[in-house]
Image (tube, rainbow, N blue to C red):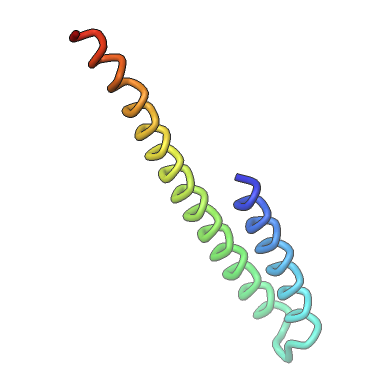
Amino acid sequence: MRRFFSFLLGSLVGALFGATIALLIAPSSGEELQARARDRIGNLRNEIQQAYEARVSQLEAELDSMRKRTSTPSKAKAEE
């Protein structure tokens, strides 16, 4: 989990840094830059959401697997 948050923080910092550099050196108008920034932020938000959902489903699968392993021996003992 700590590794995921480190990745998330790194992605956010990188995105902010990249956006700042783009604003400083881009030869586009302010409106165009704002539109592109909104698009990039939206894409970043979607990527973060997808990464979050993937990690949650992975952790849920691991939890289910652990629950099955711990419940199986107790059922076998109950049948004996």
